[in-house]
Length: 427
Image 1 (cartoon, one colour):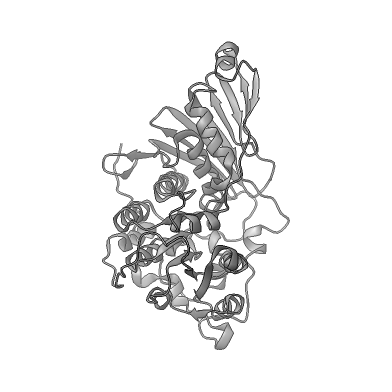
Image 2 (tube, one colour):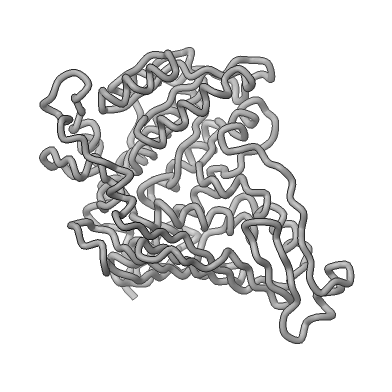
């Protein structure tokens, strides 16, 4: 076995930010806003996802007593579009937004390779943070950001939407009380299939925009790359990379980070609890079988992971066929289907053991309760009303497993987790 410390040139450089001292001044904000205080929010990264958040937050501003006061993006057209929605200020450089004392919290919806740095800068500036998934781009960044949240004691929410689905929280209660016996494995999938790949169709290229253009068409390409901070390699203006970053390794982990993060986080809630669990071993396979348009990422991706509490995981994501496998958890005494109301059924020779834990029934369903969506949950947490659906501990544990899978696929190696050193070992 050969031991590495994630020394692949194209992504270890990105971890430099994780230990670099941040220059932004920290402001003295309270850890949670008062119940009646207006929360002023800035949104950083206002492409499709970020603009959606701006619109959603504006719609609920009166009911939730919040205000979107500023937005930021490296593309001037996006800045102006978002400003028109929120009637706030706009910046090409996110650091100007973070300097504002009237901004209490920021929502980050940039490309993945910026998530860690902006999150850490925001924490250093005294802001609460909602960071879209995936939490970071590398394992090292995930550990560093987790530690920063612990240190700054700010509200930090990661954005996999299914963690707001009560099914997984009720499943956790059922599993913890032994209703399907000892859990030994689980599986799930997040698949898509379209005549034009959604990573192309949803990310359309604007042929008029670029770094040499003026007005709405201006894009700060150097800032977007982030090469000054070691976030991505310095390359000439490449519209395909800017508008369709999810297809390229320097900025994204493909379907693993874009789709499977949504699956792993809630399954970890169900089996391990709100803080998740780190894997011991991860493998991945797949390939680029159909979508051969110059992309880096595979269109078919499968990962397996083993966990120290004694269970294994199988997840699939493909862009070539959308018939998936359900979210299902397998116990020694019974099996549980998730997504809607958890349904439980006995298995094998263990009908009587199952019935003992399920009110004498051979099959059972668990009723769900409404939960606040991800944005409202974050707002509640900032006011001291409950915990976020996906905290930094769960976000980090999910990120470690997902990134280990990405590297297993890329390196064709098994990835092991050294829990004591919190390092990846390449086997």
